Picture 1 (tube, rainbow, N blue to C red):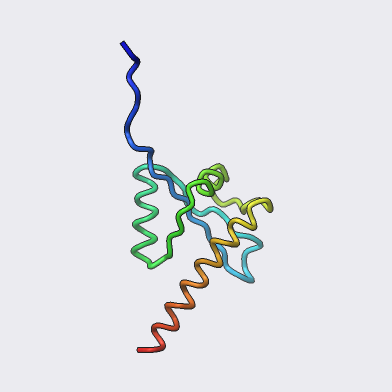
Picture 2: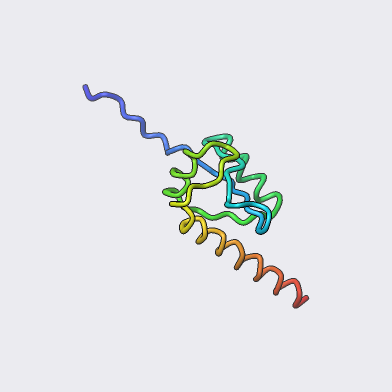
Length: 100
């Protein structure tokens, strides 16, 4: 008999970052979790129209950072790509609102 294998899907993970230009020295982790907690983080983000960016590898690394801690310098480039994505989305939303 073969041992039972866990074939359940991997638990969803989420990490929320905050960065306020001119106020924060670097982005920092404000929420993180897996399973139900991850689903709640994502639901709150959607409820507040906060853009979501999916990168499972980056989430794995960010999840190891303590809540409230700033991201380490070696993650600046990866997180800068996320921030650029968010800033572009925000710019497009503003442009679309101004057309109305």
